[in-house]
Length: 433
Image (cartoon, helix red, strand yellow):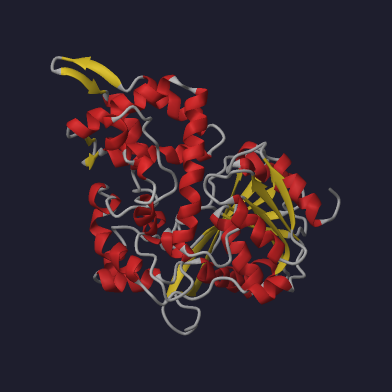
């Protein structure tokens, strides 16, 4: 059943599909997928090629645009667009603390979530493509984790693709999670150094907040303890084009005078709660490290273990000396499942996923080396979330892949640079750039 409605300059249609939970068992249990079709208002009756958008994450539903915002405006000039909520996100059988108990206990939940990686997402796309395009191949635009999925698509079902466009999402084909985070922490440190160079007053502000958290118990609205490690994780913002500025504004008015002395203000705490909470995207925390699992080695909380190899991230030691407090980035840690109310009920499930040793490969190097699909990728110089060296090595391994390496944008270039970024990459797939 579909329903259509209008927003400025665009006609939207809600679409729902039923697909197998496990594509290896097509006659077994099914789940529901949700996607939003978008077409330019003046082209609604035309027979247009399709563009499938795969969101970053993992664990986030597709963008909820109003009208023709961001890159969608450029896409609608040539395409009918399908904004897919990947399984477990948005309207596609969401996986949360509220829904996962329907599966049973932690063991059943963890087993269920093994079907929520890129390979299953690609097979979902292939299952719905005939119902959307009539069987014709489509163009796929993959942002960040959506780019990881696109490389899996090129590995598993290239016949479904007319063109592939990737922004900030060329994964390593063979790196273990440990390798990913050993490359990540130095990048994060560089981003923090750049932030402090831009806003030197934030060095002392961050030290003061960290010192307060080391000596006081602070509980955010909703019951979320604000530990110093949680405060450091706000560095996730630094990978976005405006993230350094937003972090600066957050830090500048953190304290207020109160009868008992300086306190972290309610306004600061409320903003931090929104930034730290996984209530809107718990799947991100649950399966984040599983996207790097491709063999018999467990991911085993790789970000937490590897952090110990970088003692400069220890806030207590920084405060005890005169070093700046370093923020962290896109890392998931076991303590998050103890502090975040949205994740606490899922702690055992997360532990089981971290210990799992039967991950299957997500990419096919031989098939990628023989690729015939036109593909272009934006690689952002010193991207905080995806290692540039890993991305360029993968680019060399995919036959015919053309890259645009730029330091004009950060990881969110598809948003910040729209429509220029999409236009440039589409031109590369047509050998016009």
